[in-house]
Amino acid sequence: MTTSAIDHDKLSRVIGRLGDAAIDPAAWPAIMDDLCRAAGATGAVLLQADIRTPDVPRTASMDEALQRYFGQSWHVSDPRARGVPRAMSGEVITDEDCVTPDEMRSDPMYNEVLRPFGLQWFAGIGFWAGSASWVLTLQRTSREGAFDMRDTRLLAQLAPRLTETATLSTAIGRVALHSMTNVLDRVRQPALVIDRAGRVLSRNEAADAGFDDEIRIRDRRLVVRDKLAMARIDRLIDAIRFTAEHHALSHEPILIRRMAKPPVALRVLPIDGAARNVFLGARAMLTLSNLVPRLPPEPNLIAQAFDVTPAEARLVSLLASGLSVEQASERLRIARETARNHLKSVFSKTGTHRQVELISLVAQLM
Image (cartoon, rainbow, N blue to C red; front, side):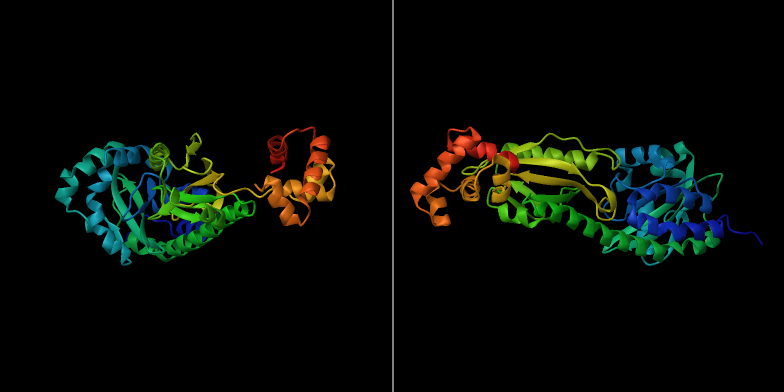
């Protein structure tokens, strides 16, 4: 009686390590390398069953084949996709479940994508990340041989653990995303997170407070009235879609002009850590400077910075928020003449001569 090509002990150790990837998405390639050694395979790839993109975890051994697979759009005509429904029902699928021997010999995908890189046989383990279906694929060379029933029975152990890992990873990633935008919310910095397709995954209250007819979220996408800015945002999304996961995004700020309000500067920040996991697809954080009026510095900070009295500092804080001297005097319940005298005193102490100069100076504390 022959035994499986899979090392059961090594496979068990890999299964025990899957939780590491839930905490640190960067752990996937190393875990998949170990899985290949346990399964007698050359390479492994994580693929979303219904939305396939090149930006997925894989072993380095699959890089060249995947470049051709996605670069020449073979992923849209891969005959092995026929087996995905069976994989999602709990079976571990192999080539024999998807194609006939004649098809394997003649199919262009096998001949132009797999065989040039020495690849021949595959096994697919289906699992779920929320409502999204995923397949972990293992690839063997012709010398390593096909996956048989003994192999698939052992690999079936992976399916429930992969679903657990994906579910936990998604939950941890959402918490991380919320934390990232929430931190910026505390300083009234509007921010939102988008996935590789440009869909908004998360946004903070500061962003919601600033959205209007000129800058808004529609159908889970950022939309702006400024046509030039919108075209640049579309190009940004294209860059995100076609930039590999491990490559840093580099993009100049986008200026969004508005009709009756100051322009907004959109900047792109990277997503790191647990938030950057393949199941969420979070790819970039966008900050929107000047979308909402910034809070003026606290009067205590103004008093310390410029050696002015508490009463003078309270007046300056209100002026920095956009109020006029008359409006500030009413808010403080002091006479307008008193407010003007406070302002003259502050001019003298700060070396400024006009209100606009003073506000510009105070803005450095914001």
